[in-house]
Length: 123
Image (cartoon, rainbow, N blue to C red; front, side, top):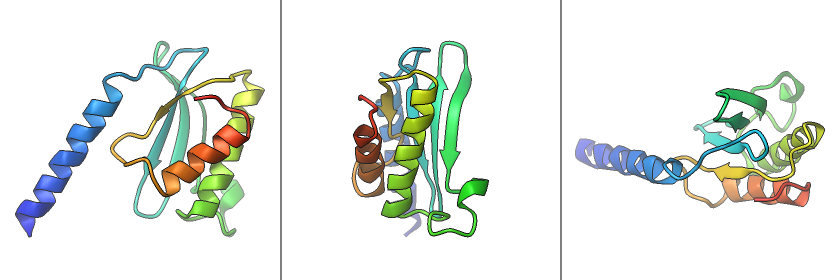
C-alpha cells in the first residue's frame, strides 16, 4: 500500500511540473491558480513578473463562514468562479491563464472554470 501512495504522489508532482513549466502570468494576463485540498478551494490571480498576488478568494474566507460555500463542493466552486471573475473585472483584467496545478481538469475544477468563463473571464 505504501508503494502505491508513493507512486501516486510522484505522478501528481510530475503532472504539476508538466503543467506549470509552460505557464507564466503577467500584469495584463495573470495566472489563475487553483489549489484544491481535501476540504477547501483556494483561487488566486498571480502576476509572476512582479511576484505578487493581485486577488484571491477561498472557501476559508470570512464572507463564506457559516454558509453552504464554506467547504469544497461544486456549488462553492461555482460561487468562487464568479467571485474571482468580478475581482478581475475590478482590476480591469479580461483574460487569464488557467493553472490547475496537480489536479485533473474535471469535477470541481471544471465547474469553477465554467463559472469564471460565464462571468466574463477569457482563457
